[in-house]
Image (cartoon, rainbow, N blue to C red):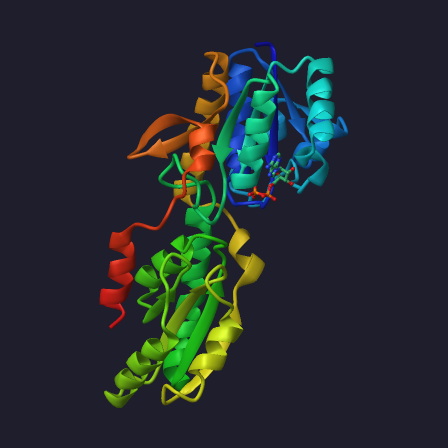
Length: 319
Ligand code: ADP
């Protein structure tokens, strides 16, 4: 391979820049040119790219977001859009592509690979819902933002006898809510993987109130319910007042943690080296601290859930 393309696509996550930096510098180390497509698949469809040199990724490892920008591109979901992208890649002499993104972006990567373009995917999603890797890039950083925010809210909860109902991201996966609940000592985690009974939750919080425990933290994954809906059901039933906080896009921002920087650097390097070794249609992941390749078909066809042990832990320790 003489020239590869790279893009960041879908929801941004902290650590995408670190992955991009590793892709660019590894490729250059192998004397392979790198075209950085802007705004995900729309950059490929509209031939918007930058030729990346080592300096173009200087000073980005600690920056959240993505310097290549990201976007959602509906056109790429159509066959015509994909054909246009493939035509442009061939015209530009791109021998292989690295896609950094979440579940949807990896679906796009799989589509490109089926059309004959060598592609390797790198999992980047704060939800940590991608099979084939223990952690996806950005999940640890988002978790640390949530823990900092909840620690601050706990000060008010304990000073004013309040329950804080805090909504965190997680469309189909309760990873952020469950792990933050363990790390913050929250009383309740409501996640999409487990059916929840608000009557039981209210009874439990009221029983604690009777023991003189007059504040609590309830973490809700957005995919399970909205904090407003939970509030409607709990308010007036637990002995003390409730307050709602929706953390929203705060969770995506900020500097990547050390864990995400190193994960992204390892995955970026391995994605390029896998392409150069002739691999395609695969995702690089980190499983038990080892870098592994998994077929995109398997990645996309397998549902990743929060470990049962973690769910039990939130329940036992929140009592
Ligand atoms: P994420 O990658 O964060 O999950 P999206 O689901 O929005 O974000 O996907 C990002 C982009 O990936 C979409 O805008 C589209 O360009 C591409 N994409 C998503 N799903 C598919 C699909 N089934 N086939 C082809 N491309 C897809």
